[in-house]
Length: 192
Image (tube, rainbow, N blue to C red; front, side, top):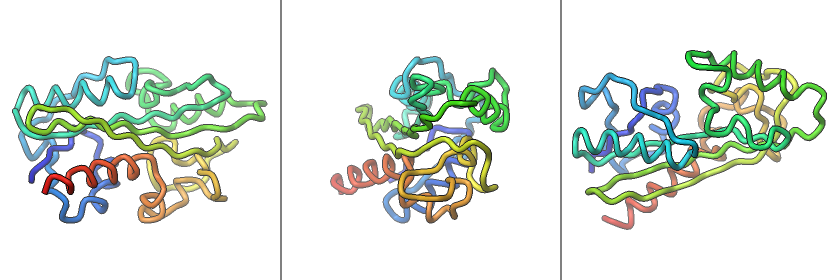
């Protein structure tokens, strides 16, 4: 089975590729000749994931999935949440977003947070959802150079290192995205 991952984020493709193995053949947007930006205008992770997968399915009638991920910080009432990728504004960098979180978290002792991923899979026109999350806390400064996004300031529960200090294999054992992907893969395996 071929499935398109409806994302232009190469970090995400790199992260999930080892999880797939022989479950299905992963196609990127460039594999199907798509190079535009996909609209992302919904106010929930579920809405954005669904909007992205429907956009590709409607255009190409090809089985596909899309995800949306948010960092949800308790002390900031769930921010940045659905706006995680553009928390510091349109066209912002990972560093801009990290700087904004660290600024807003100054002097706050409750640093509890979670990463949450929602995947929308469209298979032969029917949509399915899968979710994964990991709890942790926001660090007071960056640690590590790997990963992407907020990884340098997020330390998962039961660990003393950030996501950015982990190898990809370590992160994939516990991450929000890998949990959602494992649910998707288990579902696909039931269809064989």
